[in-house]
Amino acid sequence: MNVFLTGASSGIGAALATFYAARGATLGLFARRETELKLIAATLEPADVRTYAGDVREAAALSAAARDFIASVGVPDVVIASAGVSRGTLTSYAEDLPAFRAVFDTNVLGMVATFQPFVDPMRGKSSGVLAGIASIAGFRGLPGAGAYSASKAAAIAYLESLRVELSDSGVAVVTICPGFIATPMTEDNPYRMPFLMPADVAARKIARAIERKKRFYVLPWQMAVVGRALKVVPRPLYDRLVAHRPHKPRITD
Image (cartoon, rainbow, N blue to C red):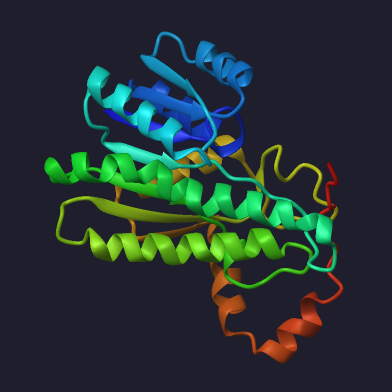
């Protein structure tokens, strides 16, 4: 099996790399932080691993990595867009506008740029899976997380559009919506995180959903129940329930 994934230097991406390496997959790992990426790759030996340092906001870097991976090992069976960022943001602060842009560019356009070089090659062999890591945070808008919630809502809609576009191609599109996963992205959250799941457990469940080509998958199952409830809560009640929820800290650079 050939697997290409982004965001491979930490969190869910690194856990997925470890999972697939243990099962003998040939891996293409793309991440922004080259040092951390190489450290992860070193732990995966003797798996066949190719590393690509780059930012998913740079489509040319992803395209070059895709060309090299395909030329070296062939068209991947699975491509996972796992790269993502979460920043506390507030619209009232003009200095948060760059953070909004960075979150959207990474979580939405970065996903598009990840898949784009692989669509035609996978369609050419009428097989493969494109899997995008979205979030349950995309189900409703969360206070202090306007950029993150909106980007994940956009990712969910984008993945659905792509799934329908490729419905007769033999290429499956899988939308993954995790709840709280124990990763560096969540470790500083100043609020309770119900049903927090270890990253290695999440990776195993995500890989199973990809193998089964599930169109839409929420994990853990408890968050799937929460997600369904969130979607039907009337707006006035929802506003009262979350208005005073603690915010993810803003980071000012």
